[in-house]
Image 1: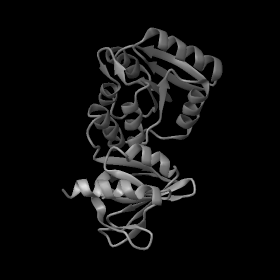
Image 2 (image 1 turned 60 degrees about the vertical axis):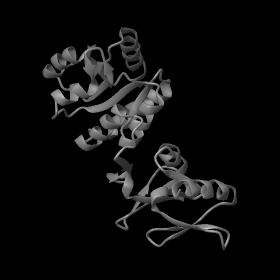
Image 3 (image 1 turned 90 degrees about the horizontal axis):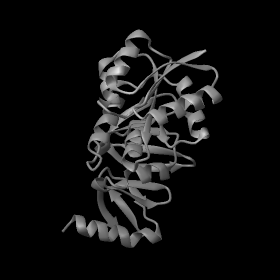
Image 4 (image 1 turned 135 degrees about the vertical axis):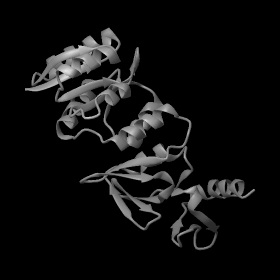
Amino acid sequence: MLTAIIIEDMIDALQLLKSDLETRHPEIEIIATAQSVVEAAKVLRKNQPDILFLDIMLGDGTGFDVLEIFPDLKSKIIFVTASDEFAIRAFKFAAIDYVLKPYSYEELDLAVNRAKEQIKPNKERLSILKDTLAAPEQKPNKISLHTLDQITIVNLDDIIRCESDSNNTIFHLQDKRKIFVTKTLKYFSDMLKSYDFIRIHQSHLVNLQCISAYIKTDGGYLMLKNGENVPVSVRKKTEIIEILDKMHR
């Protein structure tokens, strides 16, 4: 048996999650629940569960307050949050799993199965999540990249471009490193489009700050500041020219 504690300030949502877990995951024993930071502190001092279901927004604080009270907590964490585009983006930047309310059974099952396999997120990834949630309109400083065998944290400004490799993405960095990530280019294009990254081709996503020039010959391509050339698709040419014109006014 695995043990779990649910921290959720809405009683209906708490009872529903408890019931769904008891029905769908009998291998998980719910040993306690809490509806606030204060209550969470009391139950976690008595027991540290295998899995902690943690709501982001609580009546007397946040889920991060709970984690700060217990910096050495060994529990695997499943964050629970209401549907919000900024919240979703923040979790993606930190590469931390979450369940959106209202969730489907499939989403809940997937989160539980992932929690069984993962280790607790480190402080730097939690910091990325907290900072990105706190200032959703600002450009995040860092992003967590989930490779096959580890999670690598890089500065957003250090990313020159991203390149599609089937259903995976290769990140090209300023220090010449290449990081292979097991997610599609579209996933990162959607995540980064608000932060000066532009999809210039089916296979290429480029940091606007790393563009040196647009060359119209040979079908049209971008010359990057690191000396690389990247092709621009026909349907993206007009958009690229307009963006670069605005940047150099």
